[in-house]
Amino acid sequence: MKILLIGAVFDTGNLGVSALAESSIKVIVHRWPSAEIKILGGQREACRYDLDIMGVKRSVELLPLRYSKNVFLPNHFFVLFLASLLVRICPLRRLRDFLASRNKYLKAIFDADLAVDITGGDSFSDIYGLYRFMYILLPKLLLIRFRKRLVMLPQTYGPFNGRLSRTLSRYVLRRASIVHSRDRAGMECVRTLLGPRLSANGEKIRFTPDVAFVLDPVEPPAEQSAFVRNVRAKSTTLVGLNVSGLLFNDAASQSRFGLKCSYPSSVRSIVGRLLEKPDVTILLVPHVFSYRGDDSESDVKACTAVYDSAGAEQRVRLVNLQDKYSHNQAKHIIGQCDFFIGSRMHSCIAAMSQGVPTVGVAYSQKFHGVFDTVDMSGCVADARSLDERELAEKVDSLFVERDRISRDLQNRIPRLKQDIFDIFNDPNGS
Image (tube, rainbow, N blue to C red; front, side):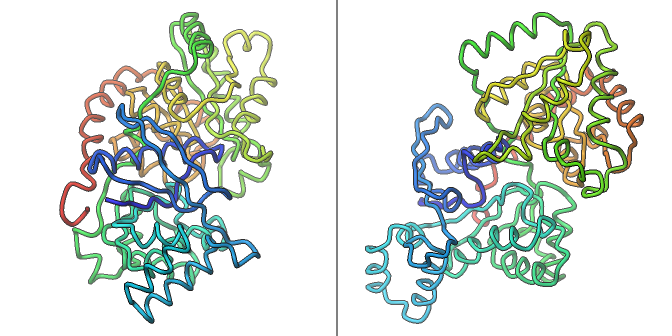
């Protein structure tokens, strides 16, 4: 099997996207151990990623898709889309082979048996603007024009507020072989787009958990690992706290996301309330780093601001984890915690998948959908409906219930992971 993965890459600064990329590859390899996998889209330059997937070393090639002013690049979307039209007009094998022999990007698309798409987990929507919507949509359209079989991996769909985005999304989803949604609301969104005739086909639209639940944790380098162990040893209860730079660093985040409370003030209230308990130490865990010099959404910047604003007494039991680490290492670090609070979805998934009782401080509906996957929707503290006091009280009440939550997670996670590995295990889904 030759498979193209679109919608997730490595080295973006966002560990959640990296987790999706590796987990998607892991699910593919579980089904087809000898599959040749390439990533289409992403960075500006072609490269290879060396990965350890289920104990086997694999090299995955990244083939960037370009949209620059230089339309004569061999990997420019316009060049590849034009080639798809030529193939439709004159579908001769000799023409296809000739074109492919002169362009490795075309060859990768021509040769692919299957394309799988994950759209960053939550980016298949127009709420981030039409420009970004078109950026994530064009690779899908390209593969459809080349008549490639397309499987939509578990992700969030919608909302689609504009007529153009609804029309184009409907076009893509109708031509996908299988549409996996990681939440129930996404399934309803897809059913609405497809219409009653296609949405009645229960085989096409499926509810499947986020693939990042199967990501493997990897212990960080010895010095960093020892540091986390030392922090762990100093407290009876280690609480991991992920502070979202998307919400914390943007002064307009309260109005932008419709929050009922000030996110920075709420985080500080949660920290203060937890540190009133004498046996608690808080570990600040960034999950998004700066990318290409842009720290506007950096969790490191947000966590540092929380630490710097804390009083001297609080800093004794407040640890700011600033060293950079990989998505696998982040999962290992989070797994050392007794309780976890996160506003980045995949930091929460990293915790729940290891049985760590987790609170998702939500700024969108996607938290409810993903937590519901493991019957943990009650562990969502929604900043859109709770004020600062209510949010801190919700976290505090779930902290008291952490042992029960952990037991429930440990009972549910094994079956959930098996559901993820079964994505390609039937004729319709493969």
